[in-house]
Length: 101
Image 1: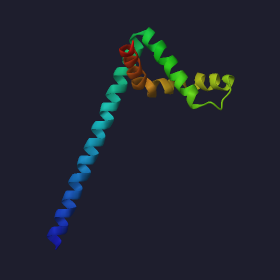
Image 2: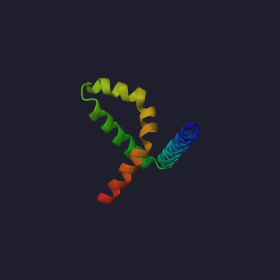
Image 3: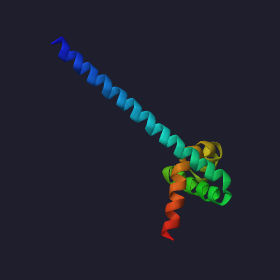
Image 4: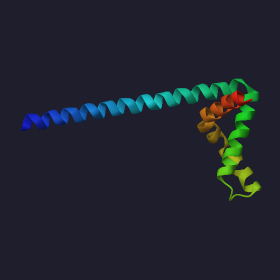
């Protein structure tokens, strides 16, 4: 009986390793995608302006309870983190916008 439980523990440990490895790869891919998107936004100012407007409109739609003045204050202070976190999404939207035209 001990041997069977040992095998079960070994399988569980292997599954845990695979999950951790998969999770690390997933985060690395996300980070690489975000880095590439941020680089693209920093090298093309027209694309950056479009992405900034896209993220601003998206954020505004998520916060309808704020007045225009409150939202502008929120945007002023949170724009860097929103642009950082939303770079990959904005680039994807920019690319798909080009396909639709």
